Length: 195
Image (cartoon, rainbow, N blue to C red):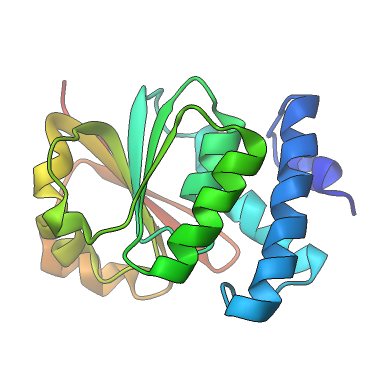
């Protein structure tokens, strides 16, 4: 199945320019990934699934003007969202130099003006505040909320891409005003900020 068919089947309607640009990302990821071990599986269908995984929450989260993705790695979900939503200010926070080099190369190749890449740990970031904080497969919910305090506005929301251990994490984090949307093995944890 083509990426476009896969995304449209999941109610994601994107411009043709997105598909041109995401093709560049896929080719670069496959090329760099073999050399630098950026991402687990590099076959097209696995990459398509990761792109779908990255974008699926756009169907249920509220509009946002800016976001920071913590521990972006090879670009999921932050880089994919930044390509799909060029009108939104995106910050990718990634401490590892190899991954940052890859993210910067993709940014330059696609001319992504809405994107800032920060090579750092999130707890050391100063001078940015965002409406939405995203993260996939980085530490547990309670710790993530603690680590991201310095980039959060009073009303910021969180979107965490979680696996099956989410229930235990929710008990430990003692959060309310959240919803969980599940798709296959993925649990999307959306914690809505209060305006």
